[in-house]
Image (tube, rainbow, N blue to C red; front, side, top):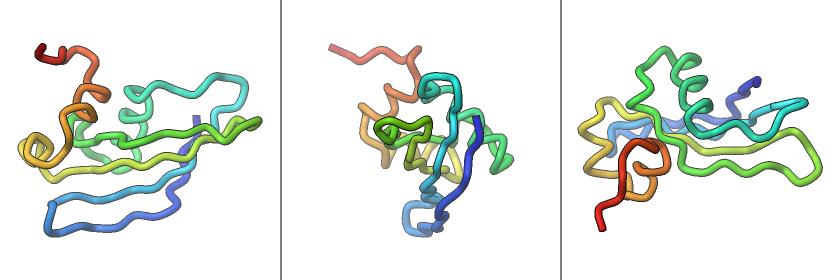
Length: 98
């Protein structure tokens, strides 16, 4: 899995970096959000709990995916800003309250 950063923009109001990335995953299916989070955290030298994948879409017929991620300054900001369904998608151990 190789990540190429297409754009990175700082949003001071929401205390986060907004990343658009391209992901090459030759000879394997689209990686899970967990694996992508870990790789983006490694690239940006931050903790995994500050990285949230907003969307990931595989380009039809290729081994390339395009995605969007947010990297927050602190995990507390995540709880205030990100929708609950995004938090659950990025943390499978969290169960939705019914």
